[in-house]
Length: 351
Image (cartoon, rainbow, N blue to C red; front, side, top):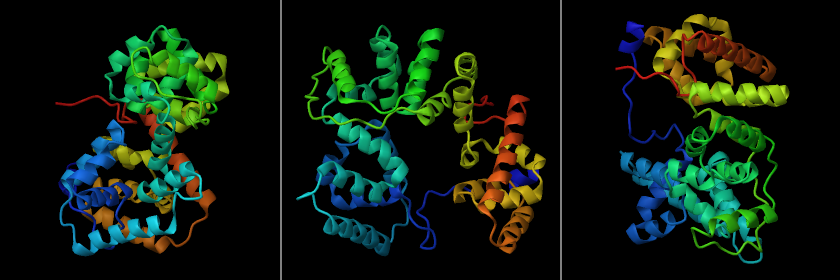
C-alpha cells in the first residue's frame, strides 16, 4: 500500500494534451471564456445550479489553453450552428441536438428535460436553488406521487437529502413511485405547477409535453447519495413489495465505471483480491477514467506491466468483458458488505 501511495500521480488541473480529446464540459468552458462576460452571463442564466457550479469550476481550473484548442472549439460550435437552424424545424429538437453535441448525451439529457420542462414550470425550477430542508418542508404534506415527481426533477444528491428528511414509510412509497415512473404527462405537470405557484410565479403549462423523468436509474442514483441505513431500509421495504424491482435498483446503484469514483484505499484493497487476468479483460472495455484510477493505485512497475498486458491482449469479446466486470463487481460488493471497502462515495471519513 505504501508503494502504491508513493507512486500515485499528482492531480493536474491543466487541459489534456492534443492526444486526449477535450471533454464536453471543457469545451463548454472554453466557449464561455471566449464569449466575453456579457454573452457568457446570458448563457449562464439558462443553466441550473449544478451546471453553473460544474462549468464554473472547470473554467477556473483551465490551464495551458492553446490557440489551436480555442480555435477547434469555436470552429466546432460554428459548424454546429451552421448545420442546423431553428427555422422550419421543431425548436425542442434543435435545442436537444445542439446541447447533446456540446455537452455529451448523458449530461444533455437531464439538462434538456429541465429546460423544456422549465419553460412552463417556473415553480418547480425554483426548487433547484433551494436548500433540501426547505424543499422537504414544502412537499412533506403532498401526495407521494407529487413528491416522486419533484424528486425526479431535482439533482440526485439534492433529492437524496430531501428523501432522508421524510418519514420512513414515505421514503419507501416515494422511491417505489420514482422507480416505476414512466415520464410525466401534461396533466401531472399542471397539477404540480398549481401546487408551487402558491409560493412562486407559476407559468402556463398548456403547451407542455411529457418529460422523460423518473425510472429505476433515477431511483438508484438518488439512493446512491443517501446514508447506508436509509438506503438499506428503503431497499428492504421495496423488496417486501417487489423483490425484482429492488434487485433492479441495486444492480444500477453501482456499475463498473463507478470504480473511478471510489476512494483510493478501497481501490487498492479491491485490486489485491482481483485476479490479474480478470482485471485485464474487464479493463479492455472500461472508460479511461477507470483505467486511470487503477493505474494510479498500483506501483509504477505494476502499472507499466498492466498497460503492456492490455496492449498485448488484443480484441476481446464484449460478453467476456461484461462477465469479467460482473465478477469484479461481485467481489467489490462482497468486500463492501464485509466492511473492507466503501462504494458509492458514502464511506466513512478519516482524520
